[in-house]
Image (cartoon, rainbow, N blue to C red; front, top):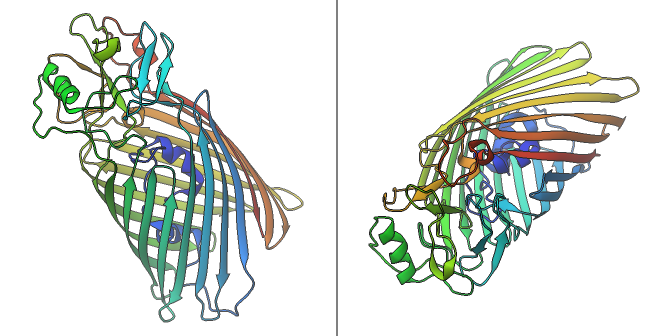
Length: 464
């Protein structure tokens, strides 16, 4: 489970360095973290008699213009226990299809690309951004949490999660502790999580900076040596990629929530994340250009030269999150801000604003505006140049580029009764690069290489 469930499509594009087919971020703090972010009552919830199950269901459709589409269904079930505790289960099924940028530059001629095994290939017409049309996957994600009171002022939340897709598997455990201070208007929180993930892409995991094989021919030691040598590098360990790789993620979160009065509440969280292992996207490549002309460098079988990306095998991330909610008569203002920085050189800022308008006859309307901006990773580059020499790391993944993003839309809901509600959410997401890359011979205009994206989000929900 991710930190912001309602922003899941945005997480796929913003600061997402996962190694799965869809490049998703591995589950971080699981349901325990979601508890700390206010999605579930804390220890201030008084013990009560066990009651029937409560369900929160949603169907979401996310569609990028001319690219990826995602259809998903979510079911959250929870039940209060007699001792004041809580059981919570969540299941998610989603299916992705469409095309995703592979990192190569648009060309003056048609370009042919292959899978890491060389057995599958696709062709991109001249002048178009190369998109991998084999982007198809189905994911099943399950999580369970048990919230247990530890006295009158403290709760312990234990959680576990598992998800599986075609080429990516995640398993994680979490624990969270919340404690009310005297007066119960301030709650302190601490959460820890550990996850172990494995990636097993079709055709195997390519070695960093190994040469994309020609159609019908798997990668080999000779081709890797050739790629490294003409770029001025040196092949130290030889051999091809492996069939699978793994990574681990350790997360920690510390927070405080304070009730300022009968109609306002605030929250401040600090979170730390450490990822280690295989952090590359096995499907992302970089174009190699000839010096001076900027033309694609010819490679084996007459196709252009492309190398698989290389990212560091560790990533440390720090994040500061603050939120404030204020009731204004019958309406509710919800404002939050998050700053994130990491040792890859990416700094990001997120401002999220919601305003719930109470309408007549149990209706409400909630406009939503979200702004996100990030700097590029230190090793982000659009292409490599023959003869200059290989850098230690490089990626052309547009998710690690510098860009701004806006989300705007609204949610409308209708309360059938106190414990049942329908809702519909319609939003539009737009992303644009900030700084056009410098013009170079043989390349399209700088603006054509910016990290741009437009997407439509539609969600239907029913809680009962």
